[in-house]
Amino acid sequence: MTQAETSPPLWLQGRDAVIAAAAPGDWREEAPDYHYSHSVMPGQRTKHHESGSLDAIVESIVQVFEMEVSHKEDPATWVSMVTEKFRTRVNGGPWADAADIVDKGSYNILIGDSVFYGQETFESSHEVFHTAFPEGFFWEVLEVVSPPPVVTFKWRHWGSFTGEYKGFAPTGEKIEMYGVSIAKVSDDLRLLEVEHYYDPNAFLGSMTGGCPVAHG
Image (cartoon, rainbow, N blue to C red; front, top):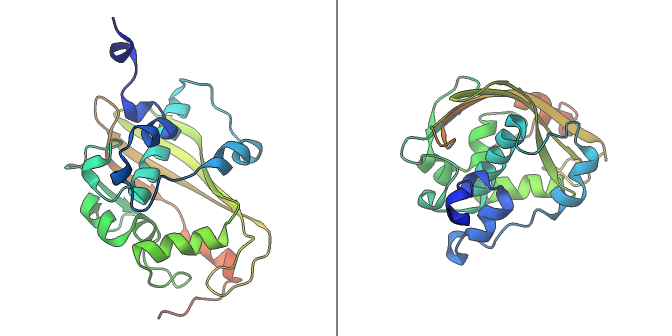
């Protein structure tokens, strides 16, 4: 049996492997750099999952998904999902498919309509958070509650608020948010459907002192 036959599929090999396997033309701009995830995140995370555990696998799949929807423009190149069937939504809101993610931007879909956010394009939404969290905005799985084919998991998203957020000065504080997601996956563990449940206003409001951002 050859190495190719024994290796797991690409989407289960981790974000770095998927980045390495991508063609130069797959990227919106250029291949993303996750050096903070390697140098800073390990010391700040609260859970360290055993390699090969379900928790580690789920975290890796979601990391690949986030990377692809943020940096690969053509859904045909996304390996983390069954693209023609995929859909996602937040807090029971409207469903969005792969085309919606390309058109609106993953951050905009995940945040939705918030008085602390306003209207952003795909590109500007990423710039907003890269500016607010220049030292990295990290994500980890806290606990997997149910196994495939319907995977329910708790998660934590955090970063140090050391850059400006929409005119609000940074405080240097660690900003954290917690949520629960329910993902339906295929037999080969690609994403079919993901529902997220969390409070975006609590997270965004913590950077604005509870003062709404004016819609423009």
